[in-house]
Length: 525
Image (cartoon, rainbow, N blue to C red; front, side, top):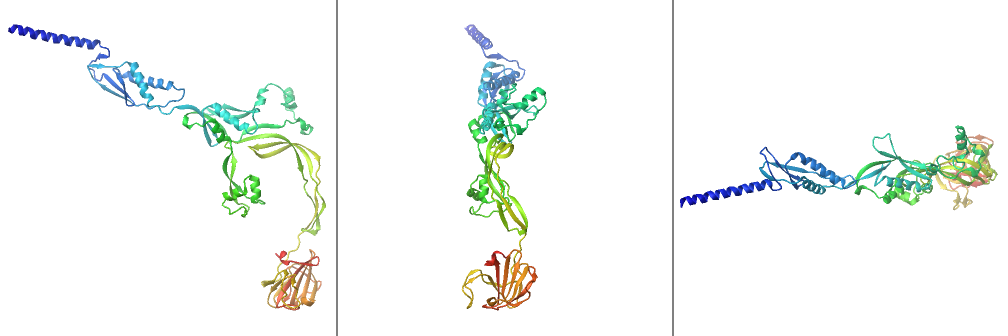
């Protein structure tokens, strides 16, 4: 009985041993399991961007797989792709372990990388106009934008934009050039129509031949735009940008070639008025007044004042030279005949003017719509203008000063109440109340024509002046000049008083032109 139990234990141990052996052999041949030698870390678990992507037994290939995954993800787009890459490798030493196929690990790496892809950077072009920058999707859009700027001013069909790489620049920089498209189409052909006779003869002789402008008829000129160019430096640089930073072609055209309000300063010059400045700058007067904090359009402006204005200008300006024909009504310059015996305020028109008419061919240079210069190529008089002829004096006329120092103006020139019986109710002089004995001076240089008693004037002095005027000084207490005496401006001629018809001590002062009293205040300095 005891022997039988021992045999049973022996059979059970053999069974267990056989089972373990079978399981061990199964593990050896089961797919995905590999025996490892005890040589340190021999199993590597991989994470990319926080995601488990598999386990490999050889660390040396993991980095290669990651690079391949990055290439595969990037190749799915034609643009520049930026992606977040964060790989972690955890190694361990085991006897038995399950590993993944490299293809499966590569696939999972690609999925993890796609989750970390940032906004795609696509190939683009940055257009620079001086300091202004705008981004476009392609070089063709750059060309179309620049062509739209040319077409805006009449260059469509005749002028084309060329973009050429600048070999002198370190980076790939395209420079813009405006070329004559019609000339490019006819290149290689000598044409009387376009090249002109001088070009044809030059081609035969190899020398430049000058054509006399005077010998050309008006019909010989080729009217229209002859040249166009950009006023600013224009460059385009290839780059990679996200879609959000690109501007559509339609919007770019509006931003770059349409007129924008640009701040500027205008300095007031001699002869300027606010209305003339408004016409000159094509800006309403009230707008100029508002921008400069003026109360209204009648505000005073002075030479040298700097006015803030906004001028409508595009970011990209176009210059062009246009050959134009026009007829012009003109006036001849005034001809002056100087007369040394006349004063400068004496003039006589000796000949009335009449306008003339002339035909003109001119090269007119524009920046956008503004004309900046004009060169006349041919001019023909249809009707000559007749100049206005004016004879004028060259002698500076005498001046007039107040004939007393101080005093109070008691009666001006014009209607008044008679201050005393017998006095006039229309005063034809100026009266200054001064104390008796106040010095009276000659208002201007001349010759004394009367000095003495003058009836209602009392003691009075008359002085005749070089310009034909006469001055009178009345109600004097004393006369200190004689008839025929020559006096200078400011010479003392008498003393004030109240002689004649007078209400009190004062000086009565008259100025006469052609024998008639005029308002002295209009002549006194």
